[in-house]
Amino acid sequence: MAGSSTSSVIAGISANSLVSIAKFIGFSVSGSGAMLSEAIHSVADTVNQALLLLGLKRSERVADEVHPEGYGRERFFWGLVSALGIFFLGAGVTLWHGIHALMHPETSNHTWVTWAVLTFAVVLEGGALAVATRGLFKDAKAAGVSATQYFKEGRDPTLIAILAEDAAAVLGLLFAIAGIALESVTGSPLWDAIATLSIGVLLAGVAIFLVRVNRVFLLSRAIDPEIEQAIRGVFEKHPIVSDVVSMTGVVLTMGKYRVAADLDFDGGALARAVLSERDLTALRAELDSDEALSAWLEGFAEDLLKALGEEVDRLEDEVRTAVPGVTQLDLEADA
Image 1: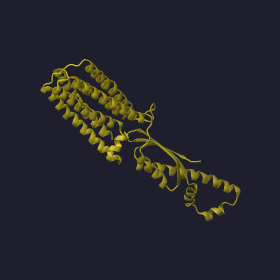
Image 2: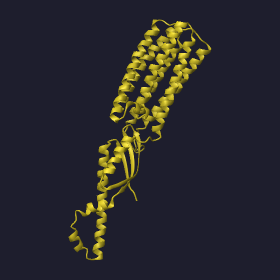
Image 3: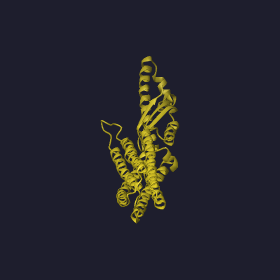
Image 4: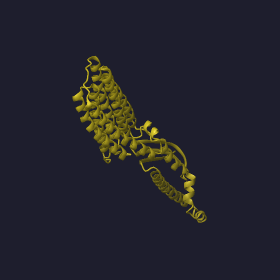
């Protein structure tokens, strides 16, 4: 998953950097508020996606004494910072400019440069959106769910953020094209101002959505149902586990989970497994005194504990084989 996120971020940063320059050139020539809003939009996207890339890199640091669970949630923190940047830098400035344009309308001077810039922007932003969409389908297939479900559940907030920002960039361009076209046809600068406000509202909506997605992971999001079922299936199939009393799992970072389970172990099955290696006929002959029985019981108890430890180790190996992302597994015996 991280690979799809990283490639999508890099594609987005590259496209938005070039598009920002082109849009500012278009604004300097036309004076269009919608074009300026789009330029601000692209700058905001560039900065925000750079923050997402920073989060991806910092989340890959290994665990240490200060952070024994690692730095995986850094990607969610920087994703939240990025979303707030979209809201304040992108939406805030754009809405302010749109309101100003409504109160003080000024006719823009659109030439072929404006349309060349918009065409260039659509091609690059569309390409970045295609890369992010391909990453979404790839990761959804790997997770065994539909792309729609993967997006709705926000399973990878970094990839979701990139996809949402790229989609908003393309939709924002369509708003700008519509506003500029209507202004050119009617001669009214209000269309340009309306397009600017529409872009601002769009950015605010995207920002609020991304804040909600990252908030879920920062508050320890539960593991996905199919992952939980795979782990529970391993427990239920194990011969010495009679019941899964309770189980909780949380996402540490993308593809890494912490799972705690309270299991009811079958003491009879464990005892039979230990006794199967003993000669019971010879054992009855040996236990001819209280002292001999007491000593045997002490040794049997030690053997039971050792066998239980071995079974728990085997159980942990089976869980990690079924779900390699389980990096922390805490098992407790139900009293």
